[in-house]
Amino acid sequence: MNRLRLSDAAMQARHAAGSCCRCMDLIRTLAMAGLLACLVGCRSDNSAPVKAPQQREPIRIELNGSDPGASEGVLDRAEGPLRFTVGHGRHGIGCEGTTFQEGVTPLGTFQVNAILSNDRFEMDPALVEQSGKTEEELRESLFSNMNSIDFKGDGETGEYGVGYISLAPVPATDQPFRFNTYDGVFRWYSFAIHGTNDETRIGKAVTGGCINAGQLTMGVLLDTVELGDAVVISSDSPCQP
Image (cartoon, rainbow, N blue to C red; front, side, top):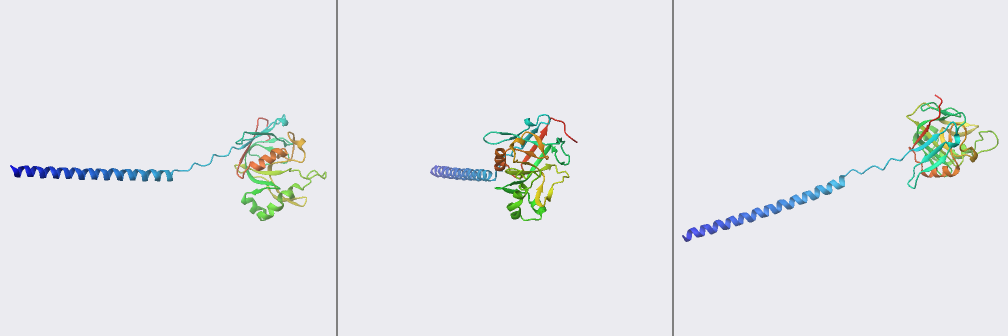
């Protein structure tokens, strides 16, 4: 009888020891699971994709062929949209995809490929290479050279005002845009938004085809626009094919 009791006690002890071991195993398993969950969570946080910056809104310009004074541009900004009056080509409005012609302002989507002023120079590297000059040479003299040209032959210069924002059509089409000389002055010839030396021209159809804007507007644009920004020019007026 005593032997049986001792055996029962031994069996109970062994059972208790086994239960304890199983508890320890369970604790270790839970601890490892918690550690793995933490590591996976940390790894997930670190490898989460970073959202790309919000795409910049295009500058939108609406031309009015019958009432040029109603032609208007809109630049979206954090502090609210900037609305500004513009002038356009003296020979009318060209349909989207047409080749740039003197005095005709084309419609369509365009991309900024150069920003020129006395204080700022940025240009698509492909254009810099096309110029045959170094970036420093262009930075030093290109805009001042362009703004020194007397296009009307009346002795007045500064017809680009405070700046020149060059535009290339999207998708690309064959255009006469190029570096050349005008009256012996090296320049970049393209479609553009630019300033003026005569604010009374704003809101009129009197330009050589470019969009022109007032000095204050150009100041904001020159501080805001970046290479690659989109400009969308549209109109409900008839356009030339």
